[in-house]
Length: 201
Image (cartoon, rainbow, N blue to C red; front, top):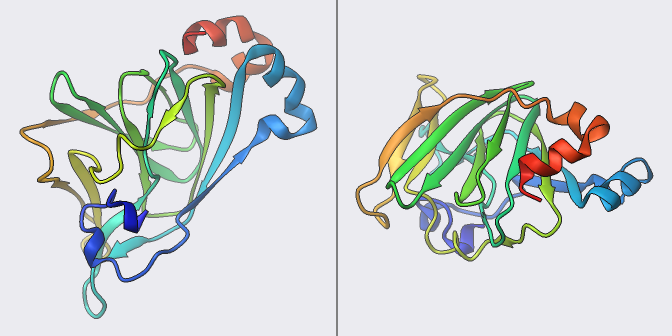
C-alpha cells in the first residue's frame, strides 16, 4: 500500500505494515451453496488498530488505517455492514465532485453504488462484513498513485478526526452521510432474490 501511493503522504511512512485481512466466507461449507446459487460473495474484512504516523517522537496524529480502496468494473452494487468497532466509509462521486463520509458503528450498514470508488478507515480494530456480486470486478488501479480527494487522520491527543485534502484532486466538496437500514444478513439467508435486486444482479 505504501509503495502504491494510495496514502496521503506515502513517502513519509517509515515502513509497510499489515493493516487488514480479507476472508472469503464463500469458501466455507456453510456459505458455499448459497453463494454459488445466488452469485453473491460474502467477505469479512478484519482491520487492525492504529494510525500511520509520519514521524516518530511526540507526533500523536497520522492517517487512520485504510483499506486500499477500489471501484467496480461492472454495474454491481455492494453492501458493507460493521460487525465490530467503528469505521468510516468513503464514497467518491466524480461527476458531482463530492466525497461522502459515513461514520459507521456496530450494526450499521450501507449500500454502495457501483459508480463510486470507496474505501474504509478505522483507528481502532474493526470487522466489516461485505456482500458483493461475484462478477462485480474490483479495479484497484483506479486508486493506485492517486488515493482519494480527502483522507482521514486521527489525533490521539485531542481525539479529533481530521479531513485532509489530497492535492492530486481538484476542487471536491465533502459531505457527511448516514448509515442505512438494509437488513442485509437476514436477506442474504432468507430472500436472496431481494438481495440480488439490491446488488444489481
